[in-house]
Image (cartoon, rainbow, N blue to C red; front, top):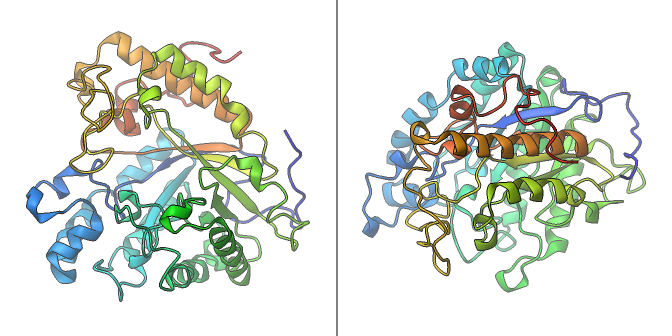
Length: 408
């Protein structure tokens, strides 16, 4: 593993001692940016003809005012201060909180604002519970990836058109200016410039150079707000080591940059067809992919899912590869019981626990930390840390190992 870049300051602000203390976090998905598979109840009232498949089309269908009326009860109830204390009591030290650009500017597009005050509440709750916060800009105008978790599921990306990159930087600057203030030094561990931007997709209007310049500009803006707030960039589904030498002290004296890599084993036909032992071995064998970066590297999203059985995981109205209902897939097994943890056999519970342990073991050894996706769902236990903990499947304490050393 290459040596980590040298730093100008003794340590970054934000409470997490990056590079010395492991990040052990959990994401708060589906709260301030809707995802249909996390909270399907938000989408069930609408018919197929309504075309409501994400937050964009929800607000498009309802109009801004009514959309806010629908979202406010969700924002005010899906997470509470009690969740933060339970997260801390479970051994986690950080929460990653996704938020969309429209929380700061809804003057274009159908979205409605109103989520920003809930981020403030979350930061206050985190501080009270002794947790640190990674703020994550999860959705950009025109969609940076076409996924529903960007706010808009689309095959036609226009993030790099129509001034949308500049609009993204403007929304991000509001976050950076506010949370770069020294009054947040004890709680804000970092700000992630943009979640999962596609970096190379010329046929869909994505140019890596534009994405890279956005990240360079976003970094520069952060440094005008705070000299020592950690800036997190997502690897854009590229090899993390491909960013070596970029935004380092030797590159315009860049400081305090961390890299976010996401690791899932359920989004191809080949992955969902693997046996549990193969999933564990894949974790062990794949460690070199994300352990060769010259920056602090975290696995900012991962899960316990070895299937894509969570309803609407691949998009609202789209089936699963595992049971052959996804276009171009073939049947591997039934999804019937995967979303009901009470029906899981002891064998399945052990398989899922072993998969979690393999990931924890590898991420702890090879990276600077990890953040599980996600803390809670309405009914997708393979992705639900709270449910997995309550059922004795997610290790408690986090260092507990039922199966010993899995990766040799």
